[in-house]
Length: 116
Image (cartoon, rainbow, N blue to C red):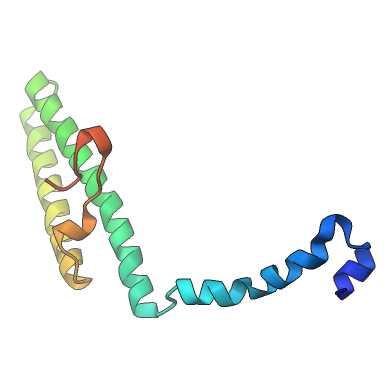
């Protein structure tokens, strides 16, 4: 019986579960790659995927507003420039982290893939 079991009188058979809990850090270390280079790239991939999703949503909304006639010419120009700069910066960041468009792709179910 473990010291925890002695103190608690082994409620619910916790003493039997302790070996499994104690082996958890070892199992976790085998599954989690804590290499800083891979962690940084994985985080960049996640963030850039979310930014790409938002960029595409903003682009589609802008097109709807343009087609609906709710934007003035100067607003259309500013919006176009902003979206072009965002896309250019995304390309730079993908290059910096060695990512391709396919690395940012998500299957959105009935909506299809994120990256066309």
